[in-house]
Image (cartoon, rainbow, N blue to C red; front, side, top):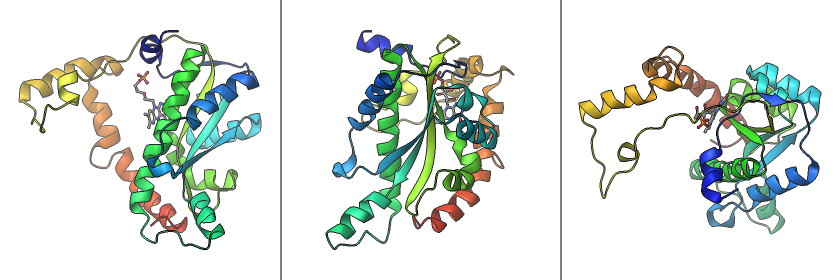
Length: 238
Ligand SMILES: Cc1cc2nc3c(=O)[nH]c(=O)nc-3n(C[C@H](O)[C@H](O)[C@H](O)COP(=O)(O)O)c2cc1C
């Protein structure tokens, strides 16, 4: 596949054939993750590959995402400062005490690795889906995967043989996503247009419902905050 075709063809796949991806292809996908840029060569991420059917089923149930079970391989991406602390300790040095910036850049590193993997999976004819829903049961996943302190499950990536071919999902127009030179505030008409463009992604036909459910007051992300903070403290990030 042409590179541009790969980028355009990638979309979130949520139905998979119950077929295993050959190991050599999984390794190519993992190599793509390894090749991603990493801040200051720190490698602030790692991923746990889950292939065991029982474990995948358990995670899928815990987080309410059946496609995690259907897919061939499930990667749980971690912010990983544990390895960094080990490397520093090995040479007699300490990890930074204020770890907020490391955590933010760990999320960037992990996302870059995962997107590289999603693109190579697409190029090889496989499907993938990012799974932020690992946050629905982050504490349980920490236990299930035996994660040490200073590792935190950020999101997952399920990869498998696709059993659907969904149309491309809409995106906001280029002018709303990219600002020329300085941030440009949005005109009311642009906001109205955004709702019209994005209506297609929703079953209800109103993107507001989705925005509100996830990002609105009392929504999903707000509800996650407390447990996320608690777990990040427990795992020595904060
Ligand atoms: C960080 C992140 C988390 C996501 N979490 C989930 C998830 O938990 N479950 C799911 O089915 N899709 C998830 N998605 C997929 C998005 O819903 C999807 O990318 C978006 O609707 C656009 O569709 P497309 O990827 O097909 O272009 C996630 C995507 C990202 C980037």
